[in-house]
Each structure stands twice: as C-alpha cells, then as structure tokens.
Length: 212
Image (cartoon, rainbow, N blue to C red; front, side):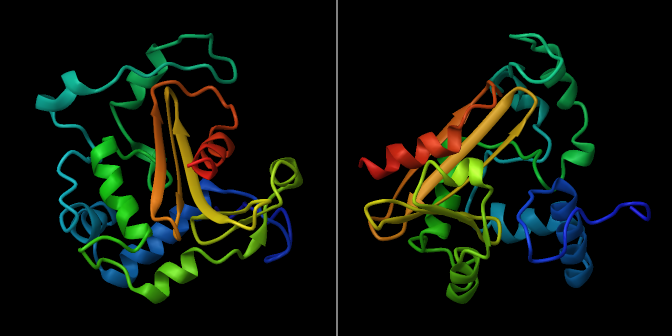
C-alpha cells in the first residue's frame, strides 16, 4: 500500500477497485469496533434471515455448492480446478467478493435495496445516497445506454425510455452474479452463473428488466 499511487485525481474518473472496497471494509470495522465478517453477519445476514449465505460454506452444505467453471485469462475453457482452490480460503477476495449465497437469500437482500423489506437494516437516506450517480461510467459501457453512472456500490442506468434502474455484478474464478432492479415497478432480475466468462452480463440483465 505505501507504494500504491492514484491513477487519476480524486472525483475526476471512475475506475473500479477491489482495494478501494478493502479500505472501506477496514474503515467500517474500525468505526464499529467489530471484525468485518462479524459485522456483515450481524447487520445483514441474521436480520434478513439469509440462512444459506456464508463467508465459508459449512462442510454439511458443500454437496450443494455448484462447481465453478473458469474461462478467463490464461485459464483454459472449462477449467474447474482453479475455482475449487478458491474455496480453500477467501483471503484477499474480501470484501469485494467471496460470499456464498443462494437466489432465495439474495432476493431478500434485493428487497432491502428496493425499499420493500420489512426488516429495516438501512435508512432511507442511505439508500437514496447509494442510488445517486456520482461518477460517469467508462464510455465503452455507456455507449450501449443513454447514460450510466456509478453510485455507492450501485450502477445507475438511465435508459432511452426515461427509466432509471440500478444494478451491480461481480465475479470470482468460476462464478458470476448479476442483479438489476427497478424501484418504481418494484421488480428485479437476478442471475447467478457457475461460469465466469466476461460477457456483458450486467447490461444484459438491465435489458431483460426493462422488458418486464
């Protein structure tokens, strides 16, 4: 970290960074005086009854875990060895990734983001702040849509029909998860893949949501 440099001036350009989220988690942990994993478990997983969401899958649940398939960088198509190695230690995947979950559990989390959950784990003010565009997304992504901005952990898509939807996606070797939701219609689309080919999964899910 002491030798790390900024690639641009603050607030001048959007560039996603796993390390940035690591700093955020460290700040959260210190402010709450609680280890990150314990903090997320107590503030999110337990209140929302996300009973099949883990930082480390219990041995009794391993048989239910989908086998991941790699197709990135130097790895050959249908490489399943690399994803299996990832299960042995989440390490630097936290907090930018490394959480195991199910479609049912993530749906509970999505209801919070849409403001329809009965469990109040985040204030309305914080939700609005998360969903406010702060920085323009790179041109390669924006050119497919009217405009795309990055909020606080949320990607804000402004569509041609004057609809605004919110999305986020992430991947680890062998896995890819993407969701998008429409706050006005109160609907969401969630796709979980055990295949990590870097296609425009997020943009595709946004387009599917816009057709509903």
